[in-house]
Length: 358
Ligand SMILES: NC(=O)c1ccc[n+]([C@@H]2O[C@H](COP(=O)([O-])OP(=O)(O)OC[C@H]3O[C@@H](n4cnc5c(N)ncnc54)[C@H](OP(=O)(O)O)[C@@H]3O)[C@@H](O)[C@H]2O)c1
Image (cartoon, rainbow, N blue to C red; front, side, top):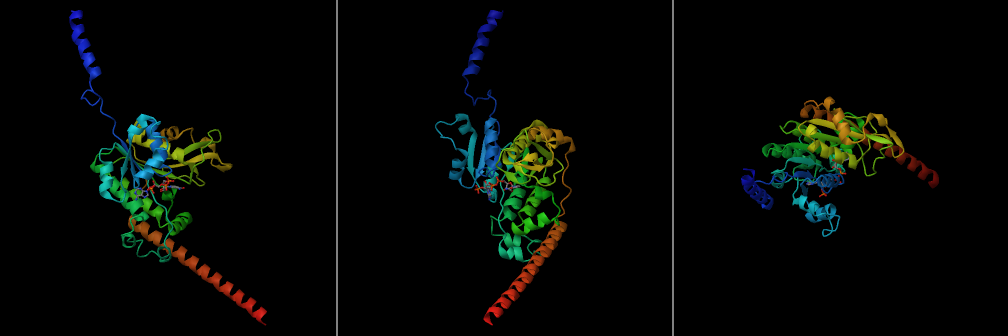
């Protein structure tokens, strides 16, 4: 009897071995992870980390040639073929809903590392924002590179598209300023100088939290390209979303925290706001104690997971009012101080001129 069965079994085994990989018996290829801002300094580290783990990556880029240059630094002929096969650069702009939808469709997770920081235009900084802050679309309607579109509206659209296409997880990179109150001086100065980038990040965060997809809001402090010395500093995270300054953190640790939040089975289905910094001696400067963190981003995240907390409901009307009031106070105090300074300078100059003229 066993000899009777041996022949068909061997034939079946041979057939399975010879079947092409796309046959219904082969395991389906893993779904890709979409990375927006893939050409950015953090984005490229995220892509690198995913490729190292053999995860297919869909890298969204506005300029495909530049993305190839940034993401394929190795000679295409000598590079690892699995890397080339797993990396798909797709052309798109996060502010263009159609290209964003094409990129999101079929992704298992999205890591949104795009963002923009730009100096305020003079009229936007000087006009107290009573009007534009309450209705930002009025002054940024056609300016698609404005943080209003890139940090807020695009993120809002991303949340909607992820829900529509059943994406399993969104990781969004924002900043530690999102944990500050509107009247915090750092928040006021950053908003006034940087086209309200921080405020629009916060609005983007709120839009994601309102959706059904599990989300990690990753809030680094100041980003650094200098690697962390593990013997001097650890990775500290707080899943209640805020950490005290100073809060420098290497981009490499932020990239690892993003990838773990998107893929690790214990973190993937959870929503939390994660503040992250290095703790200990950072480039000769002290920020916190090394014992406050852990050796890797993953260890720190898993340890803090039971303490996760989501930001409270975002009251856009109240927040806008506060921001407008603080901004107006700051700008007009600055203008008065500059005016007073100019008056003193003119008086002094007049006295000097009068003295030498006589
Ligand atoms: N720098 C800091 O200290 C700091 C601190 C806290 C948080 N952050 C946040 O972390 C984010 C990532 O930092 P980073 O150093 O990697 O920034 P980065 O190098 O300036 O990267 C920004 C990325 O966003 C992409 N991008 C901008 N507008 C886009 C659009 N409309 N459509 C598609 N992609 C767009 C850029 O693409 P292109 O290559 O096409 O321009 C680039 O890949 C920042 O954007 C900021 O929000 C930064």
